[in-house]
Length: 148
Image 1 (cartoon, rainbow, N blue to C red):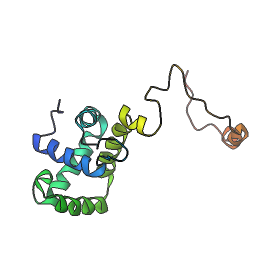
Image 2: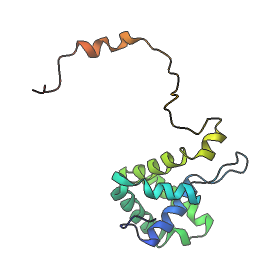
Image 3: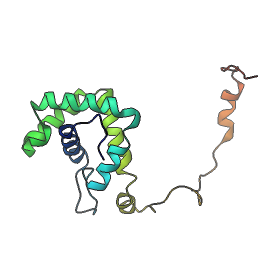
């Protein structure tokens, strides 16, 4: 289901851009970020990044001179490269959402040799480090206000 503040055109452009950011790979047996299941997760996960994503998509349309999804593949690559060079916080937010959702897909996790499961209840083993590295932090004066 589409978030109410993204138009159908924005969703089409976003999906085409997601597929350009992470295309499918036959050699690794993984879908692209424009896969139905992954892209649905992306739309559901916009939350705090929704405004930045909308700004990034508006900039993408300006660069494309119209709908990004309607461009020929070679032109999409050019516009996406220009878009990447422009960068900025809105683009970073858009890419972050795409990457987070892509790498939590079970098919992608299996292709990486990882078991697709939450970290709990079994947890993951974390090697113990050198706790003395925190001594300078512990020695600092308090930087917060106490509560009553």
